[in-house]
Length: 482
Ligand SMILES: Nc1nc2c(ncn2[C@@H]2O[C@H](COP(=O)(O)OP(=O)(O)OP(=O)(O)O)[C@@H](O)[C@H]2O)c(=O)[nH]1
Ligand SMILES: [Mg+2]
Image 1 (cartoon, rainbow, N blue to C red):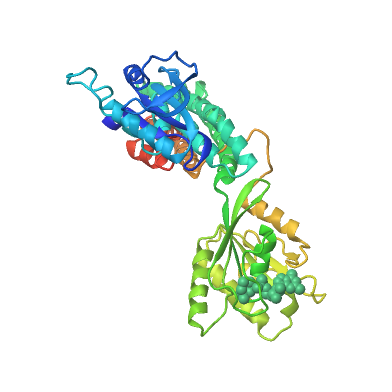
Image 2 (tube, rainbow, N blue to C red):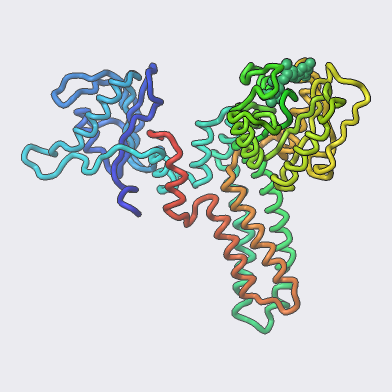
């Protein structure tokens, strides 16, 4: 284990700023001596003691509660001390500094050893990283802690809590068990090459692999839902100037975020807002109206609009019902449709929205434009009025649908894009294994290797044999003191 994983660490564990209570937390392999030195007495494990917290000269910094959790029965699995003081930034900084200072003091006058060698400030997420390294939780649970703290909707918080309690990890564990069983079977046949295929048939390796792929499919579907709840999707509103893009953003957000005027070319910069629909976060981006422009600023805005469109998970293509009969209007829409079809992947849905139903001339043909016909999202056109709100609910439901949201199913756990990618990799290796098993005279060493690779991908989710680089990436996104 790297040295940085064993140094004693200290941090302010509560959010910066003022609060009723603030906590300074220390974690280390053995900190009983430090606790005694810092507080002037030993603490009973897991009992709150009200006492003065003193500076180096013996003057009180504050009075508060001290709590000592000897390892392994602590958050990190190491010895942990928590000092609960008043939540002022200065008080907490003084306490933190006193901890660092006390650690460097001599054990006894003239002694060459100090109280707690190496005590340093914790990096973001380092307490939780310790909990992971000491097997208190696995990696998916550690991520769920950050997701719980960051949760912006009730649904996200509840699902993060379920992942934290191990629901997600259990499903991964069941997959792993089935996979290990099949691997044992295949590895055993490698030693007895003559009977191998018969043996695999008798042991129902075929059935086991099929079952495993089914099981993976179900876990993947649930994980995708969980990741959607955490990450959401990026929705870009595009269309000609004055179609009502900014009005639509405002209507979806329920606030006047973007400037709306009857002047074509009002929006220059992109305006972004995250909205929630059934607990799913949607990052909605309003863009500059698409047209040929001689205005330098507007041209830059339009270039930015195309950049956003290129990175969208879904595009809302807005049309203005009140101007359908205007000369050149339909042609300009068709131009945009062509460019959209060129610039975005076929997998990105484009939803046609016909706006301003309150002004609409009846009899307008609301069909997806030819270059986009047949694309995902184009199955059904929707009409609305961003002004009156008519049709807005249908737009919301359609967005959830193209995002792939099934329903606010019970028992959902939170997940990350990282987990989805890992499960997809597992699936790809199982597909290879399946293909190998179903050719005449299968190469069993390749089959065994594919199964091994799928287990490696699966393990990366819960963190067995995970590289230090990946841990660095994951834990550095935590807040300090967690
Ligand atoms: N009657 C009616 N007017 C609307 C509706 N939606 C937008 N408008 C009006 O259409 C005009 C343009 O609306 P915006 O939301 O600024 O349009 P935009 O697409 O953002 O325009 P640019 O930023 O110039 O590209 C404004 O006068 C809006 O009040 C609608 O549903 N009904
Ligand atoms: Mg606008």
